[in-house]
Amino acid sequence: MRKRISLLAACGLVAVGLATTPAHAADPAFPLVGPTALALPLPPATGSPREEALVFSLDVPRAGAGFGGEAVLTVDLSRIAGVATVRENAGGAKEKCAASATALVCTVRGTLPRVELSVAAAENAKNGDTAEITVTGTAAGATITPTTTKLTVGGPDLVMREMALKRDPLPGESQPLPLAFTNAGTHPAKGVVLELETTRGASLVETYDNCRTRTVADVTTALCAVDGDFLPGETYELAGESPLHVKANRNAYSDRLGYGIHPAGDEPKAAQWDGKTATGKRLTVAKRAAKAAANARGVDLNPGDNRRTFDFQTRNTADFTTAPVSLEGDLGDTLTTAFAFENKGPAWIRAQRAGDSAARTVIVVPEGVRVLRKPAGCTATTADGRERAEQLGAPRYVCALGDAVRENERVVYPFDLKVEKTLVNAKGSVTVGDWGANAPRPHAFDPNPANNTAVLVVNADDAGTGPRPTPRPSTSAGTPSPTASATPSATASATAAGLKGTGTGSGTGTTAQGGGNLASTGVTAGPIALGAAALIAAGGALYVAVRRRGPART
Image 1 (cartoon, rainbow, N blue to C red):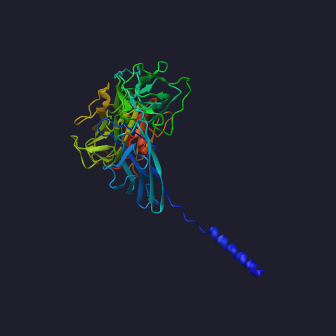
Image 2: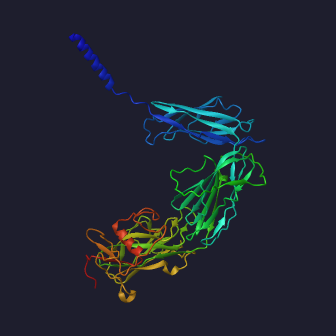
């Protein structure tokens, strides 16, 4: 009996041991990624069929975990005979595939393993013929999930017609959109989605229940889904009961309207769309009476004819200004201050080309003052505007804005300046404007160029500059009075006298530029720059009183 119990106990221990032995982790799985469907243009009566690009890639994590760096992908061509031709794209990846009548066997390597193919309709393929390409793969220590692409000869080709619009509307003016599109393909489109995109100074007047919108930065996109069969060779336009108008807003100046047409399911995707109130109205389209010439050129393989843009130049103005800065300090003092740019509107300004700067601010440093710190977006130059390698201690700085400046936007550039001489009424300047040869020139849209330049003075002489703000204790009821320290050895406090706060509307704000791109939204400077920003926002000149470290001024 004792032996039996011992045997059973031993069996139990073995069972427990088996149960607690860790299992080998499953091989990592990497899916093959490619389009689920591809439409091919009909073969022409003469000449070669047009090829379309088809790419299959292995979805490997960036770190490449579990992927040994090499895989063999097999492209099955056994189900395309008489419908399509497939070849490896000679200009694609360096790895070459071994070809047979029914397959391409490709060894792929690297961080982006892929197979690049060129596909065309077979010479005798008919409109509506279909075929399939399946890709499988193997890799050491990994599982590769296959994928299949369905090929169709012919298809819909939606072409957006160009609209003739008024290019120079007045602020508040709206105009109708004569929007129309054609199906220039060989198959009906089963539902379409209209895309309408407006920049900040333009907006769509009407809203419809089958349209959804989203706003990102200064661009609003509306997608309107329209059901139905849209036949080959037919042109469609907005129905009379559902018009669309675009309006030049009060802040309009240089704005863009984008408009496009997409097959249902092919429209731009977004994770979040804005909420809306039901209107009880739906956007619809109607067939034009005149039939457009059918075009068997192809299908929606080239999105270039699906979308167009129109640029408006609204007859509006924007007042760019800078703020005067008065500093006070003795020999050896470090002064922490900020220089400001403001667009007082009413228009927002967008550069003509993406990446260009909408304006620049030029800071001329008084003689006897050395720059110890500057924002990353401000570039040092010589006094005559030439590039300078050493970025600190320059006599002149050029600060570029981003490619868009909103109405009522303020930008603050924080600087640290060291007084290297005993100074009285030492003057520099802060100027904002368009790009010029050596100095900014006023923009054409700016109605008041006189306020584009402001004085920068260190130790102002009252007789020469007029009244100066008087520093006050840190706070008083109803008056902003930010304070900040520059360094452990030299501190500075910023205050304003007689300031009056100003209200702001949509899109207003202050950007403190402490580094990086000067057009970025959000605050990147520290408390010192924020204090200066508050003073700029209040509409007054800056005044910085510095605790003296050096000998008294004579």
